[in-house]
Length: 53
Image (cartoon, rainbow, N blue to C red):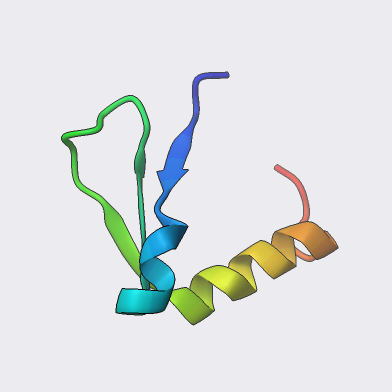
């Protein structure tokens, strides 16, 4: 549906953050979240803890 994001997980270990941006707007802003918070989010998605829209 054209709602894609890019996640730079390669920055998690060296910098402790995970930048996330709109893949269609590569020069636009990035949302930066702590690596631990992103890991918890991914675990919640995989476990189905977040429900559906």
